[in-house]
Length: 85
Image (cartoon, rainbow, N blue to C red; front, side):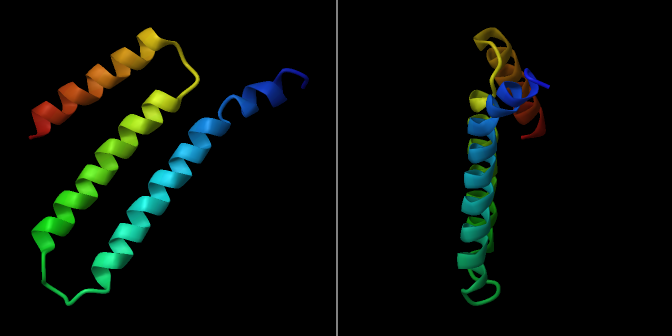
């Protein structure tokens, strides 16, 4: 039980990053929904996709793991993205 609290606290930066990314995504989506329907749908999709990708990168970089593993996860995300697009 003594080791559980410090272990959970090591993820506090990651949790805060996840919250910021989710809030940025929801705020951007809300701002676009306030506009007229059908206007700038391509811009909306591109901007939301960019927010998600940058957020994913921020979350991976904020994880309490070693730099080598962060680099491998980032490389994997890059490979998956290049295969998808």
